[in-house]
Image (cartoon, rainbow, N blue to C red; front, side):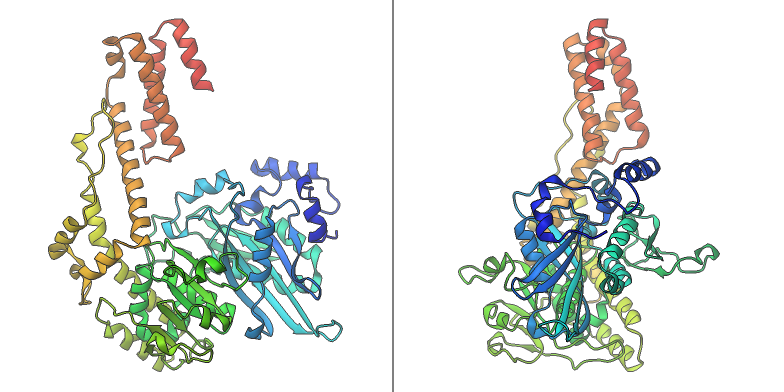
Length: 595
């Protein structure tokens, strides 16, 4: 079945046409899928992807979205324009052959945020750094540029792009590797079949081992949960006999090759960790989108398990809808990490305080010449040498041990994967040493459990006082877990003013407030509520029932961390209180519980 070109699809967007598998009716499809999984057609697909786009080059129009699949997928004109420009490398990149990279773009304002109830349910079990950001989409690109004398331009240029809310970089790049080369040979029917396979996938449930078939290949993956020990991978390797049909096992869904990205700058990796931790404006200038996107994602990844709360763009172009906002000189550069390839940015962004300029990333096993830290005033010309251009003075002394360990690995031709494990563990220990004193102090802001009374509102958290926190560092600071010396206090003071602290503390405060609500619910359940009603008026009893019902709704809506039997106990209490009331009131209150 031929897919309609985007121009036609755009006109029909309001009609949301059904997409039908050849030889089947929409009713058949919905019955098959719906009966087996209780889902409507395309619900399975939507749990993983928003849509798939094909972007081609038109001599008159330039880059254009040729196909959007499924056809009922909604993209605003602004989103389509962003996808068009972000799906092709800049002309100066000279990417011949196949290139894979990733971009991230802002969802149009005014667009209704699609709250996929299933996805939101899974979101709560994800580590904070893998949770969806409702304001952004990711684009995963497989771009092909090959010589073709039959075309006017002399080149075939096309991108297959997966648009998703999920930040599973390694996973979606692997999916594209499986389907894109064949798509370029077989075109739309093949793409349609691949999308139908995705629609049959199980939901992306964290912690479950998932088997995902696509076009004759079965991928085995596991999405991490917030309960996993940081720095471990839980996927079972190919040792079980029952796994004979598995073609691809992914040990990670989201991680990039950390050492390959940090390789040119590993002497300065600790300084870059500080810059990312503090949410400093950072530009990565790279020769191609794959290098820029990998490096930006590696930087964001290096403070894991902390989430990077500011904006980051793995690949950013002069056509991006935020170009003016991010390059203006009328205000200080924003807290954002940009990956760019166009030499024009060397001039446009030379007022930014921190710029990483990298050359071609070498294949695993080769080590590029280590770049130096240079003064920003040297970055005037377009052909500036690779380097870290900044006047930033790190707070912490450089850890020479990790540098020796990585240099030894290079000399011994240690595989890049093994080097990445060493570097990831180093960053993890550094981040944990930094965050543990903050976690310890924030835990002390929690009221004592004995102060929770079932008949009063839950108590409030104590206020975070920076100076009080600083005093705790003398005895319980990072020196307990890290051998690195330096001005830790200065680093904390800077961090407390950063977007990353703001985002981290808001998340922790929300979790602790929910914990207090849950403890309050448990305290209520332990009370003899029926005895209480006997000593109070009917009006007060009805008020109590309504409040308890609201508590149940809140617990459900906010996924409060309550014990399973607490909810059941509370429902039993409510039912017992209602049955003790006069019949006319019973009828009214039972009706409210059914609506």
